Length: 254
Image 1 (tube, rainbow, N blue to C red):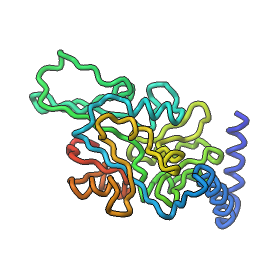
Image 2: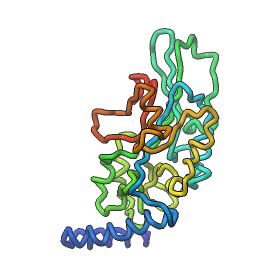
Image 3: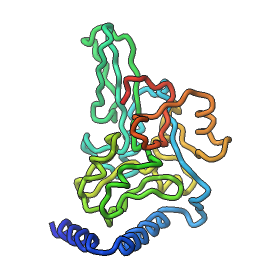
Image 4: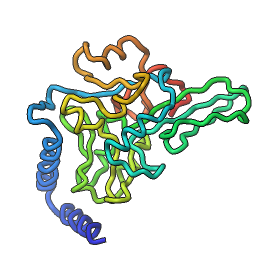
């Protein structure tokens, strides 16, 4: 309670400051946070990250969900996720059922009582790392920000737990961490990618359904995937300019 009170007091004081003073006080520490998460030799200006997901390759094993929780210390309860997997099942009548038991972390049990299945597929989901992120726009203290290399991060030292960003995200990709009462979400494993490593979910995928890479430069695995396949994004009408790209995405997926 004391921490929450202090946050609210800081917010009220910042709202009384001129805009220039607020921007200076917020942006300075955020820049320091991004630098602290990177390797000394890392140059953010030379990168622009994205992720491709090949829907037809996902087998719903849940390894990506488990790896993400372990790597990023995500609460183990079944309703806190930085990434999760959904199953889409069409029956013989064309009726669609969507489920994601425990976020798909333990895979998807089959059921013989569901009748005839016309088709089924799995769709991994995560923060879309938007180039026009609504979560950044609504944050009253600048705790959510976009780095120079295009990754949206949250400064937990500044987050006041107001949940505005959670409500603003059209992809349902944020949650409030019950331990810190601050917003959390996928960061593309920023602490890994700035050291030349892959995000944990990409590294453990047994079918290479997830492809991480640079959006700059035509030689990256992600750019090759985008050149060779029809590409879709989730909720394009929202104009968030997401940087998570899907191949073979069914029109029913939202």
